[in-house]
Amino acid sequence: MADKTDKQLLHLVIGGELSSLEGVTFADLDQVDIVGIYPNYAAAEKVWRAKAQQTVDSAQTRYFIVHLHRLLDPQNAGQ
Image (tube, rainbow, N blue to C red):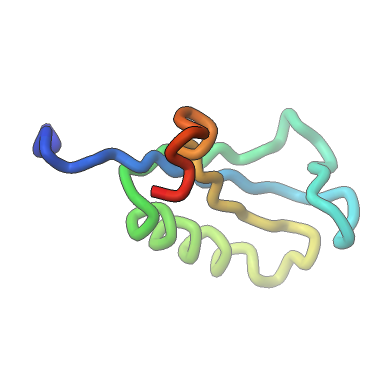
């Protein structure tokens, strides 16, 4: 269990094949890889780097880190 004094800044790692390199529209939503939700940016970045490295040969495949804490608490998005 996480220490209750630590503030969770949730981050989602998601990826998949894009329909175009010029945008962020996934080619097939059924094939989107929802990797997981992480308690901070550092943990999410570690997983993101691993997933991106696994797909380095596929130019159409991209992984992203989504700052969920900014969506959940837009008033404090800068924290």
